[in-house]
Image (cartoon, rainbow over the protein chains, first blue to last red):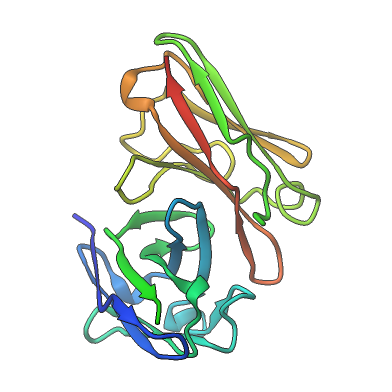
Length: 118
Length: 110
């Protein structure tokens, strides 16, 4: 059974940093492209970023609102996906989901709440 | 502002069919067959219902179907059941390593 468990959410002040992690199990993480999607309170889904598997180059791409501030990384030895979020803004407040895949996101974690507020 | 346009709400009675549209452009929906649909119940994570326009993952009832015509994709739910009441989101590859979501449609089963 595929499991994705996000952690690291919390309250942070504007301009601050936070690092989210996503522990993966139940599938071959090394082969997977992985994504982050966020959902602001009462709003819709918004793609944040995607990282390819190492075989396909391991590169990451980002949505315009987070480019230059957020960084995706992966540790295939630990089956772990990370999202480093810097220069956080109030509009980054959301539940952050990790998911397998990209154009097709087959499995989703339960989400981690990030609140950016002074 | 969402990249893709969905109606904010849709409704139908049990047993009826309802179709939710998702309108984009030739740069996203019209240009690629990478349209997905997700179902989200309140307080829960999204669930993949349709991928690559019309394919159904294992375990998704065949009451759910997807299609595309030009720059508009559609999700049809046939034989509506109470548990189908949820928010539905479309997504599409938008070229240049971008992905867009629709604003979501709240489906109410009357």
